[in-house]
Structures are given as structure tokens and as C-alpha cells.
Image 1 (cartoon, rainbow, N blue to C red):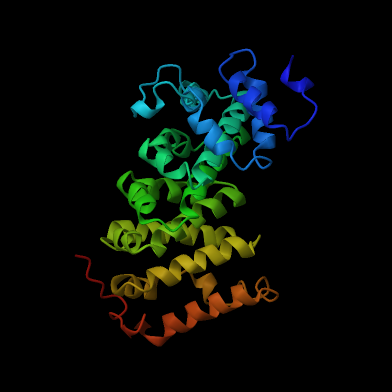
Image 2 (cartoon, rainbow, N blue to C red):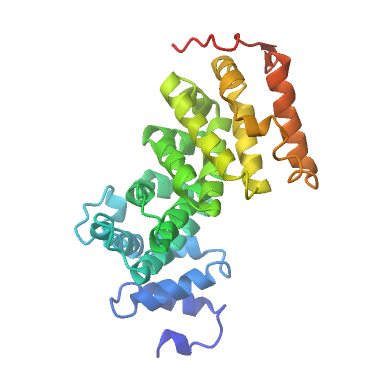
Length: 315
């Protein structure tokens, strides 16, 4: 009997059947699509996906047929195959919309695994996020590439929603900050929002803030990406995105060198009332904005004195 003939969309047997279908090349595409649609209906879908023989590897293999698995955990796994099969189509950019949609279905299931408390650690230990770097590095603005970047960002965003230093350290060690900055500057508003949210979660962590403020190149790279986002919102403001940006600046200002640097590189649009009208009906946004302005004009970072503007010692 075909999976589409199973009557109830909430039937656990349907989910199990669809997961088995991931191992069948002829049924795999339909199974990916159906599982993505139904992922919110089943709380244990992540555990079923992770613990089913060959499933995670089959998903990742959607990205490239010539994949060397990074972990023995994935050696018999299915979701891996869906991801790596499209690597050759990234450069030169020949990715079709249909292939992109299929990979995004696989990525959505990986996001499900990344979100679940019982599978999140295994997901990270298997180093699965590294498979997404190739997608996040793309700069083609066609919608099939934008979908790929956005869905990949969703996987990383799911990880950082939990305040776990191990997750932040993994992202720092594997250079995900430059990937986020890249997507903050080239993506759609939604991609910018998710990438900026991830950056915010990184700098909120003590190790993340220390990483960003460790030297001038890193700090100004983050500052330049945030400034680009601010400029992009002048004509089409986004309250959600703006608040993520302000939170990043507020956190960076808690570092003495960061505070001193922001005295001269904070975007003028955040100081000249450009966003006052868009924040008029957003009390939390207005509070964050005012907090940033007060901090930057008070001459103090955190609870102590900051360095003088223009005299930043990066060591």
C-alpha cells in the first residue's frame, strides 16, 4: 500500500512507513516532502529519524553522491545522502528549483533533529552542521539558492536557541561567524533576520563576545555586516531584525574595546531618529534603542569607564 493511502496524517505507522521510504530511491522524494509537512505533528520524529538505520546519512547524501562521512555515526545513516548530492550544482551555479526544494525538505528534517533535546548533542557530536557550510557560502541570489541558505540558517538557528556553551564553541571553532556575516549582507530580509539572530546568540555568550572582540579585523567585520543590515532597513524597516541588530551592538558595547570602537562606527541611522517611527508602536524595541543611545552617549561601558573614542587598543 502506498504511503499516500494511509488515512490519518497523525498515524505513527504513517511516519514509520515514510521513514522507511527514505531508503527507497523511488519513494524518497515523496517521503521527504510528507515528513517535512508532518514534522510538527509528532514530538518524537527527531528520535525516530536519528535512531532509524541509515536515515541521517540518506538525508545528507541528498547533498553529494561522493561523500566521505565525517563520523562513524553517519556511516549507515539516510538523511545525509540528500544533502551532499547537490554540491556539484553549487559552483558553477546549476542548481534547479526542484533540487533545491528537495534538499530543503531534508534540511528541515535535520532542523527537527537539531531542535530536539534528546538528539541535539548527538547531532553536534556527529558534526553534521559542517555539511551546511557549502550552502551558506553561496552568493547566487536566485531563489533556489536563497531557499537553500535560509533553510540551512534555520538548522543553525535551531541549535543556538538553547543557551549551551558547547554549541557556541562549535560554531566559533568551525568559523560559522563569517558565514553568518556573509548571509547578513546578501540574503533576503528573512535570511538576514535568522543570520543576525545567530550572531546575536553568539555574542551574548562570553566566549562569543571574546572571539568577536579579540582583534580589530573580527570586530570591524561584524560591525560592517551589522551596518549593512541597518542601511538595508532604511527604506523597509523590520522591527524584528532591528531589535536583533541593537542587541548585538549592546552586547558588543559591554567589551571595553568594543565600546570604544562603537563610539565611532555605530551607524548614524541608529542615532539620528531614522527608526523612531517604525519603533513607535514597539515598546521593547524603543527600550532597546534608547538603552543603546544612552550607553553610547554616557561614556561608560557596562558598569565601568570605557576607552576614549578613537583610541582602541586591540591586543
